[in-house]
Image 1: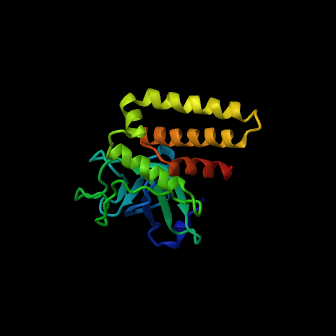
Image 2 (image 1 turned 45 degrees about the vertical axis):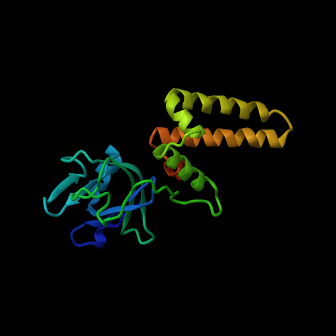
Image 3 (image 1 turned 90 degrees about the horizontal axis):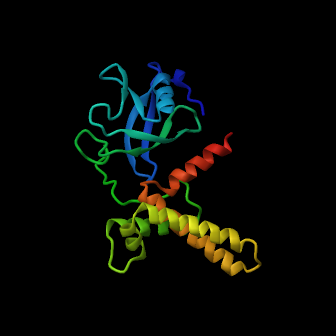
Length: 207
């Protein structure tokens, strides 16, 4: 990824900040080459503050940091898209975003597969975490904690591996579905998302 900072007289390129988990646009800032380098090196979003006339890491005063997930350049290489994980409200007013939008319980994939059910399933799991219902399997896993959730992922992974050695496609696909489901639950429990996993996979494709 390259940004042509020379396109701007002050060397500051606009940087759009998007929640990597929900897809909600959080704010707009400006980065020079040093700010972008620092952002990537420290994995926390840093801007060049025009008012302070210095590098400024978002959250350095409030503690509401933006943890870097992915950085992309637009087709003209003069605008930066930063996908991040926010720690608390982003706007100085206390709002979730600088545009007055709520960033609560909105879950999308950054590049969902057309017709994919996974974003819908992820949203359902998120809702179960936020509004646990009596009799909900996800709610029962929540009560048992991270250790049990991780154990289930391990168990389902073993089941997939065992079924892969047989010729029953239905059983194999069933176990694969169980594995994906429990992995989504574990991701939510660890406050991560499919979009973040997708970003890791995409970054590996560039290497």
